[in-house]
Image 1 (cartoon, helix red, strand yellow):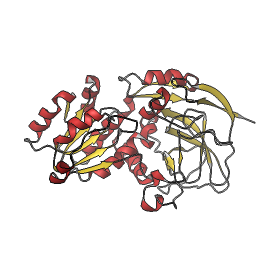
Image 2 (cartoon, rainbow, N blue to C red):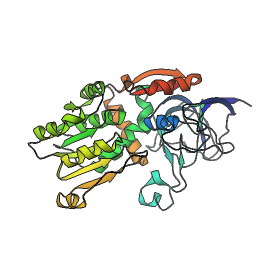
Image 3 (tube, rainbow, N blue to C red):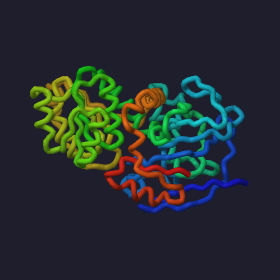
Image 4 (spheres, helix red, strand yellow):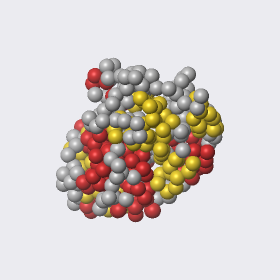
Length: 358
């Protein structure tokens, strides 16, 4: 029987072990894909570093582009957009496979499915070890939203579609209409850069990007930010940009409690704060409920996304990948055998993304 190589995380911080597994034979609605590339998300690094709990043993990685190898007998032959699927097609898929019929699926929260399978986050089960991107193969289970990729979309641009890009689509949906609005984006990693680009293409008049890292601040200007600033100058910049009224939308993408505390008073009356980055334990923040009421504020939390957001994400990248330099954000590609070295390189804040190509 053929084997597939995978980099396994057993829960020991900053350690991956290469192991061989039998290549799974897809059954029923399953599809077997060969992994063509996987970029390392911040949450992968948090798990790898021991800052974030994940079921183990597991194969990390969820920003994946794959090539279809084999279909199960009853596997879908069309993607969620109605495109035909066949062996050899390049695809991406939603980070969460959902049942479509549980309490949360019926309410449109497919990413919170009570029977969910989350790629890159699943503990091993017999025959289902290969459910992450740091492997030569990945098995797509029933309920996975699949999307065929346009041929012209570069691998480096396409890999994050199923995480960073789709998550920002969901975040901007929560933010509402951005036409002629001032949007303040906290964090200039891939989430923040994607948010800058999407906000500008959706008509935002001002996009202010904030980051502690000067290089990332400067880079945001190539992705649609109209202004960038270190955190200590944020209040002054927002006041000057909005004639003292405040930002219409604040997107918190860094996960920093201090960033949120500094920024939320800067949202204008009737404005919206969307929280995305806080996916690991952090200190609690004080909040005066009276201010939220009297200022008519909306606070939304966004975690992952629904299949419709992935569809919009891929369309955005297809339409705009020549306008914004997303392909340049992968600092380096590593072979799967050097997955641990890739994770170490990805910890460098100058590297927005590092990729692994089996």
